[in-house]
Image (tube, rainbow, N blue to C red; front, side, top):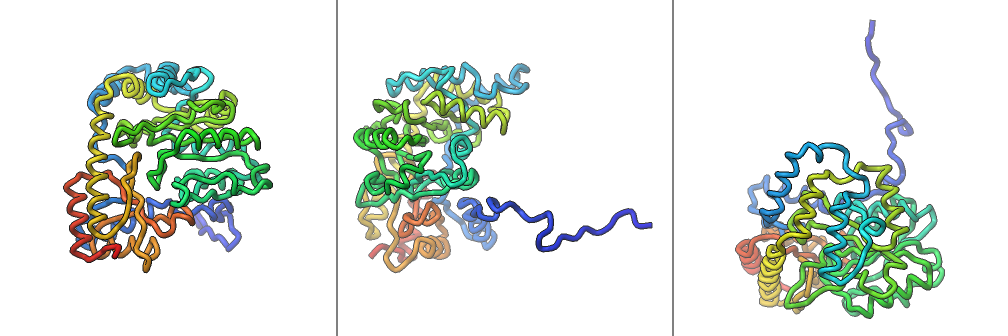
Length: 403
């Protein structure tokens, strides 16, 4: 007697994925990882200037605080959904100390499992099918992916070199603005490295007030700045908390990408909505990691100053090396990327392929960040300066230039 029978699925069988999954593109960096693996398997010494994952370790005092917290049985239970009060208070203190901004730790801050998940989940709070989100293009993929998963539509705001990679709100059609629910902004910007002046934020707040739009400002790189430049917090702008929230992460500031800890702060109604969604989806951040987060935000900041020095030195090497190869580019004032135009005869993907195949160097094609990223590649500063020098030498030897 047969104890089992073979399962068979036809074309319309139960294994068919939902439409939202069928429309979901492969994650950009997962595809890059595949190309890297293939090159390494062929024996290539790959220098990865593609992914913005800090190569320096988390500062020792933060690691040591985590070790002690892990040994405390109180941290082994379910964490508080919205984040421990101690962590949210540390966030509030950080805003006051660095940006002279007051936020209520109880009603205006929520802990996130890294800012990426909050940026992806915020659309679930406000977007119904047919609603529009205003998405910067090029931009971090989580903005568009979260919109799509919520059933929303995207209106892409072009970030053009001619406008300092800032969106022009006057070019957004009025019928689009009236249907828009969220507007994502990100400065210092990934992938372009652009920064935004105070007047830009004031214009954004006025635009959001006029059309009843919620601003979601991604400030993950606000503490990575050079040459004495100090990026603004969106929340410092008059009226900002009436129309939006700011997302932040400990990933880049404290080399904690793998720890998955961040926050959103600002408008209490928006924070409550995001916390409500999260409480039904996840169980919060491991309490011991939040204890370490308090140490990061409240303890010595010497590592932040050192981190800025390291990235500035690497930035200078990349920009000056590319200038020697014919590129006419400026030094970015913040973030950990250099946004580089590709030679006219190539698309972004073609150029990235040539660089990998001829020089063993990985750069990220700008098209992965949106249609207006075509014509550029992004170079990350997350490798040691010696490897940057080697990468530039390989480009020179392979006669990869802009000329």
